[in-house]
Image 1: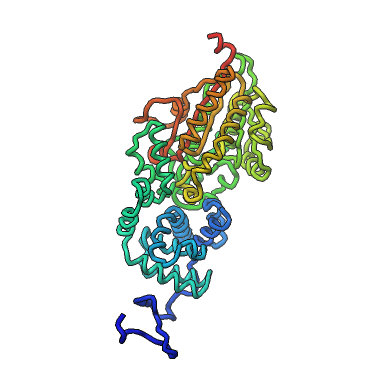
Image 2: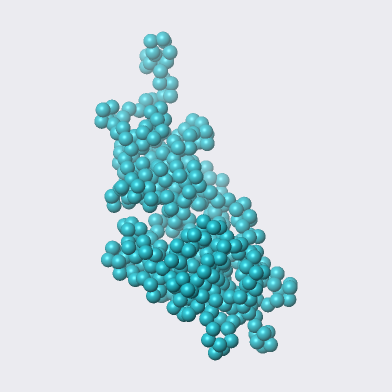
Length: 507
């Protein structure tokens, strides 16, 4: 800076030491002083996610209603929320290039606002002046006048480079191909590696990885299911939903608030991913030999990890239609209440709630059930498109920590199922350590004890209830893996197991 351009105050001190100054194109009187309701709603959700470990898909609908957003504003708030969460890792790298101190030293609330601004500047069709002024107004109202100036300066630096150039810069700095893909598709490097391995283990091609990562970033339509014999999709279809092409009695709703549908409020139509619908229906339809022929006794089913109740409601409706009975087990009292609420529309004579540890059921009720669903606690890597914040919360340590629990629950379920009955081991994760490795280990343990289990074809079971082929182009195998980029579902894994009957052993 030349001497004649140095600005000094009345005490002789220099001003504007940070270099060239940026001025708003608006006069001070024309600048926004209050936050736009849609952006405020998105900011409130991001705050809840980062401060309280909340899930955006649970918080956002209530904030939209509380802030009385119309349809257009609700759509904007939804895109801002999910987009900012989905891309937050990449945005943080960009913001770090624009700030002269470590990002972790910046107030987390300011970082959340900066992510919202970065998303508007780099991934939305919001004019730059609007993205800047609206975000600065949000910071001014919610955080303070001083931070608003900081936010303005940082976001102006972000806006000076295009999205493509930012990604090129960050990818050039990435230490590996997986890290570069993580920048491009907003996934942590370890998840990129895990998904590449998962594709290979489950019979797909490694070159499908970019399509899978991209599918994780696509905003999914809301998937609905009408409980058999209890609800219809007429109201949802009248509201603009499209019939589902993967599973019967399903629909996809891309616009509107499904919570406003009477059928959803009554619980006879439920929000449930098509992958979850498929595994529940596949278990209900799988052939079993656990009941004596001609005995005419109703089957008893178990949902071992029932909370919050989506699959349990569908299973209970299917059980009612076939004369069966469902036990829905949940270890936590407050989640058991959610399960009871989900089961409310189904005849209470065909289900009951059991509060207890799923690892203990096999010892308490051995050889009790004809069909058992074991949807174990998992990393949730298969639902990143619906819970984008999860990709930045999880770590490889979580998967290692969950493994023993998953094995113990599966072992308990196998003890609880009757000889000739069926256990469906299900995870919303494609990670091999949570899917095939768990089943292989448990099967090996049973063989060492002299007991015999058999894998059934989960693929055939799913194909039996699906409306179209699911596994074309996938290597042969018994276990089944669904994918966002192939099926438009969560990455749901399913393995079907049965205990040998005495008749099986004689053969």
